[in-house]
Length: 198
Image 1 (spheres, rainbow, N blue to C red):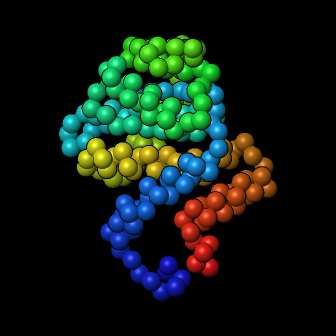
Image 2 (cartoon, rainbow, N blue to C red):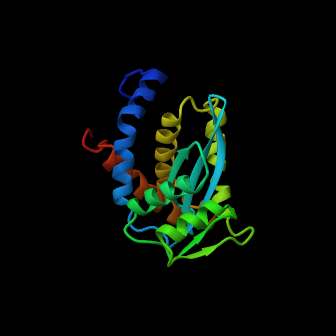
């Protein structure tokens, strides 16, 4: 936009994100295809206006975020709500679910997907616990979230976009990294309708 001589404020960009962010995220979710068959689930507390809330997050074995949910509690009912949200967004059920030892997870799993293997081995869930780090960074930059709805909207979109552009660069040769990056930008331009403007 700057190249075209258009100057916009931070507030304008924030309003655009609020208006179009959910649309972009739903398109990216439709295009992402099947995720992994091992799900890692974890919950972490976040403060919203001084009140503790719990951010439930699920990632697959490749570290791609499946979904998140911000709730006030971490009891069985909250876990069931999170599992239902995960299963609704996927085309199938996982082969294995890895969690910490929170009893709510096993109760919800037994009720909704009893045939799925459940592991609570210590340190096996580190993959999901590490995925909370970008959230903590964003939380500090934004000086905490202002409401539960704002946190839910922002974090669910942030995870989907992060999946698109996170490659594990240290594992790739430069030419493969550039190919993946170009593919991601092409997909982003298609979803955000930027290529229609060119």
